[in-house]
Length: 287
Image 1 (tube, rainbow, N blue to C red):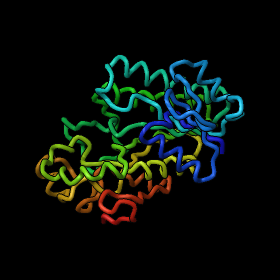
Image 2 (cartoon, rainbow, N blue to C red; image 1 turned 120 degrees about the vertical axis):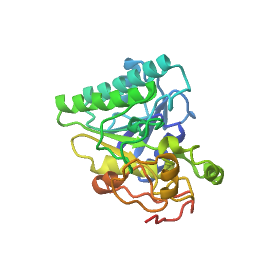
Image 3 (cartoon, one colour; image 1 turned 30 degrees about the vertical axis):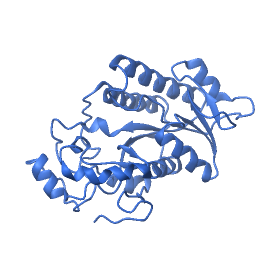
């Protein structure tokens, strides 16, 4: 397919662009920053004219897009002011979604966020492992925008039933070089409690994007995308007893199994994490 990736110069975006290209797709990176070359087009996503023009075709870069992967955003709360975060992320997402449907691009996969689950869990989660079944609980302006993007997608597919929009609620994205710091997490169970000790290897994030592009049905759906394990060597029973005593367990979990449930992504998308900080690129089992 001819696939446009917004934010393809970012941490997750670089890996997504690389992996999609390795799978044989023609990938165009739409971003404000990037290396000049045949796969990069500089675009300000807050300018609708630039967005629809870049998706329509750009000289020798491409002459139209089959699918869209939207990753561009201010990537976390606290990087910019709340107002700047809202204006940039909400307007950029609206422009991208609106331009896509105007151009007849019916397959969209985009980065939602684990933050809609209630991060940083200063209010404990309703149960563990957390999943997609309970209503969004945004606790920051960044997370509020992610929630509103999902609501926008719900209405767009209602208006245009041929659209397929998939929201991937990515956990904290990590590259292999980040894993050297993980050993220090065990010393303080509260240091990473903010996302239930979760993470996602960027390569598995790219796998989830590919799976959604391949199999997502028309309509809207949302999926938590995390690694199969936690960032801790300490067992979940010990961590939960110390940090979240009294939080109900929806089902049994393995000693180091992710507490960000990826059951739905496995079942519907065929997503299966292949990478762990414990073994880097080797297959893992955390049952």
